[in-house]
Amino acid sequence: MAFVFQFLSRWPLRLLHALGALCGWVVYALSAEYRHRFQAHIRLAGVSVADARAAVAAAGHMVLELPKLWLGAPVAVQWDGAHHIEQALAERRGIIFLTPHLGSFEVTAQAYAQRFGASGSAMTVLYRPARQPWLRRIVEASRSRPGLHTAPANLAGVKQLIKALRAGACVGLLPDQVPPEGQGAWVPFFGQPAYTMTLAARLAQQTGARVVLAWGERLPAGAGYKVCVQPYEVALSRDLSEATAQINAAMEQVIRQLPSQYLWGYARYKQPRQPDTGSTQEG
Image 1: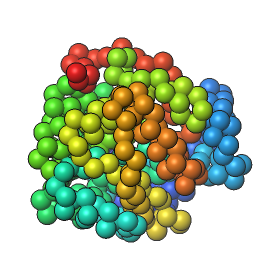
Image 2: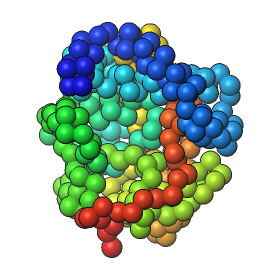
Image 3: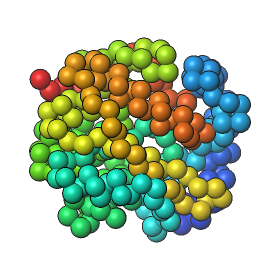
């Protein structure tokens, strides 16, 4: 499989996305469980038929572009709202980047590291290592680059995030990812209760860091990506559940701007799993 990744990393992005679109539709056609979940989620959010069809292909785009992003030559990246990052960095309060499962969330962190991180303001991203050893090696190597650090999804990783924010650096989270039992709260997401990580709200409450919304939009015909950045101006509640619900509402607003590239097939409303040894829960 490592050889396959190396081989695909040399393909043009346009061809990878074309193959990814085909794979997205094949999975949609063959997996009844995935298809029913996808359809249920787009009905909840009121997504149009055109955007829903594009999102089926976008799920495949996300998978097939990974070899290029991890192992290939740098891709073309545009920016929309980079001045918000510059303003937040100047405050030296630390920045919490919140990115939903929208577009290419992999390219968002890479683009930040290339433009801002290499000059001294690194980003630390929380991640859960892949179970397959060959994939774990590829992912870890791809994310070991100037301006980009990783933190494991456990208590030690949370402490690493807090330390980075208190030093005025940045962290990146996917707040619409279902956390293990005991590390989240049941709050609305597109009108239905979803078990949601409280980590993003707790980090903001404990450190006073700025919250910024960011996502990587795929451009048509393999032309690259556009990293979009918006400040989050809402004052978070001191109540943890309410603050978590506020963050969910912010994720909904971001997703509605680009519903054709959201992972609607993600099991967002599933029951949380039991935590691993070394919980990320923080008092």
